[in-house]
Image (cartoon, rainbow, N blue to C red; front, side, top):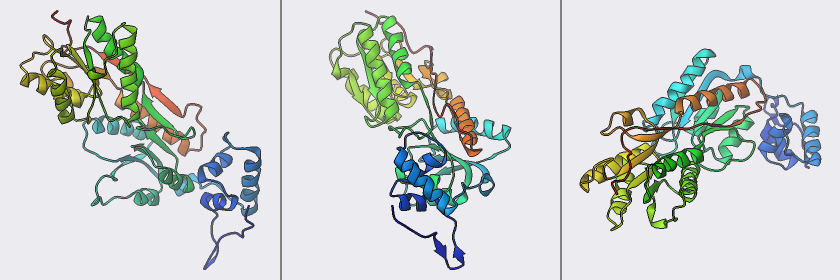
Length: 342
């Protein structure tokens, strides 16, 4: 451990930050945060070293008053239909607590006017990120004493990162089991990008139901595509072009399912008479397509409300016993599924 003096500026000693303590102790910012917040996962020697520096420098956790009374809701891309459902859930809880909501979009476009540094500089009460936060971004928030929660994480997160997601595996299994119960034996799945955690979970649920039904695992019936109507239609065209085509298709989200509708029309197939289709999300629009879509209901508004409650609790300095939540999914059966003709 380096023997360092309290950081100084032109006008005298500057406030000690978590980042400064971490550098002095030769550990990461999250490790210092664990020690300061009394969390486990730190060795006794490291904890003693960090605590000694905290006492030496007189470090104090940033007071809540130093943060603005705002929940910042961060999207990487704010164009998807489900964004409205998420915003609705955040605003519902924020209103109850007398907290404002700021919605930010950044990260995908070089011309974006909002940057991550802007978010940190605004010092919101807490951050709810509908995107994966990088390690550097998480460290920035921790160093500034800004609590955060990840919404529906796309990749694996460290154990100390709070998140709210959905029961994607059981949702995928329920969707596929519905099709096997109807008598389908050639059931395809259009999954999403392979590096997306929730897509992989839905695919695993599909595989589990296929195995439970005693059906052979057929790799040709699994296609990966973008989570868009265009991705769904392109994948469906390839699946429907094979001689022994599937009689049912389960998609990783509703947008892909809408693409399957288009591909089925092009192929002269009727839904559900010739092809059953199941989506995932239950966006409001899918109840109005023809025929209305059977889909797995992902409670986006409830998930966003739970994530906001958790973020605000962390902002008050409370240690939540449930900082990693999965909200239950349910199957909504409509008119896009039916027993196969043969």
